[in-house]
Image (cartoon, rainbow, N blue to C red; front, top):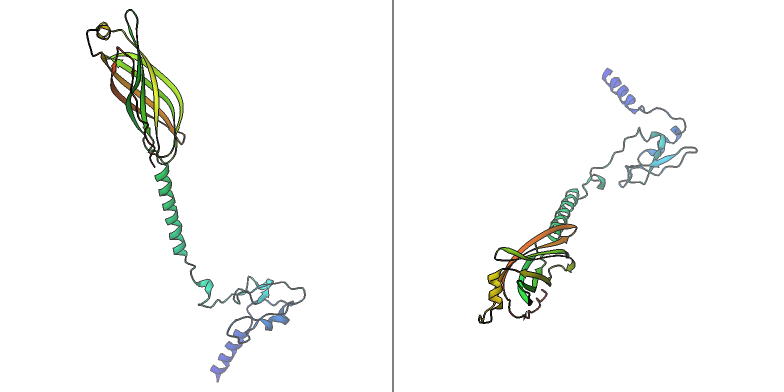
Length: 259
């Protein structure tokens, strides 16, 4: 018998509310009990006068609880509730990382600076004149410039130095503004005025008994270009045999642009 009274007392203690009594809402406390429905553990409640309410999280927004008890009541969410299931978080993170890597790789691939190709195409024309001791040889040469970048480049400066018998006979430095498109090629003409004062060369070029009047010129050049605010230089050189007796004009075909 003593055991029964002890259990009864314990059960009555459990029925006592562990929350502080609130006179404004005690009369409505019974309205928050379950009505036995399988779809929701809360029911819609009548608003008490002068009492504010917030949405009940357990009922998925279909019920309300007094705002005064918002920090005291515990919401019981079913195990199968959609809010407890992961929303493909790992998939979203994987896709974000993949998109970032692909985008970064494409940016690096297309914007990475590549060297341009500078190929001397030879002599285009020459003009010869003599004075008492020197040979004045004006030549016009051609450069083929190929842009291997996926962005346009701008050729800004060309510096040329011409040597004959290891002596500098001509120099020129031109400021340019030549635009070359992505994966395109252009031809560029440049002229250099040379003055040869070697006595033996002068005799070869002016002696009429000699049928071949050629001089060997060593041409060295530096091409400066910009690419996305990045400046770079390309060095090139070539050797040209030029007729120092008569004027020469050599036709050259234009370099076709790649498709």
